[in-house]
Image (cartoon, helix red, strand yellow):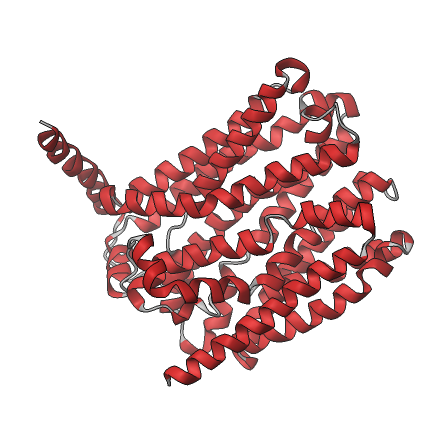
Length: 446
């Protein structure tokens, strides 16, 4: 009986995807520019969700979910919940790769973004500690884990497809397009929180105002879902994936045969990912707890930083196409290491120094993050690249960024900002070592 049920269910789901392809296909070649639009829309929507939670960890959660703790401890507990999504991402990737193999690409993406939206809206409706007590914290952590699983499942292969179809002399330019969604998502999330923060009283903001960005995140996900489905279910997109052998494979098989590429790729991007949260979430928490600047002022400076990061990300494509993606990433790792040495001085130098830390950090982040993906994932054999690129990104976030705000704030608050320098420096060193190992492996293979 079960086999009969299965035989009816599979054709049904396949038929839905087939019908969607037939309706949307125009039987023309999918241009890299069209793929790029899908990449930017998809990544921007995901990063918006990402940063809404991160900013709320500083401005909202300590007071709403951890009022029984001092502000520093409440923020550290919030950052612990923040890290849960990164721990869950690889599991989400594995789960949804299996779903795609069984039910198809469109079903997988729809289910992942539906889960992401459900988790995000769940947070928006979640009562605080004053109403539910410890249960509210448990539910917040549960929704955060669901977000991580959904993030892992939202991989659509568009960045890999874009890389394969980009002109050889412009691969750096097209590689940065997949990264452009991060500063765009941060910019929109910061601007929305800034508007709410200055428009509402502190009590209204903590009672209900903070929930609106989570509702907006759900709406953006719906729009992004249709924009991405319109592309990925076409015959042309499917044909390009098949020609590039960009299909999901077993995670067990990938790790067994290509595990070294996953970890080299993750560590090669470590400097960028470590810097990511140390110029976005960390400065907001550090300056808010020390009351050295108003929240509004910090958000304004970070919004300016977001624009700088967008320009830096775009510039990274031009730079990488002229000097090489690996050289660009290695050079930026050295610059990040130098930047880390001056970080404590800048953060202890009043508003001017603090603003300089944020703005310079965003400039370095834009150029380095713009080329952080794809520099090593091109090492994967064709049939491993689809799943390999997804897992490499998952582990880069996990190793480099998941615990960055928690570790940096905890150590800096208790032992001094020298630990912030050490954290950034370690990321830069790991990037340089990984790039060196990768070059040796390539030389050996040649």
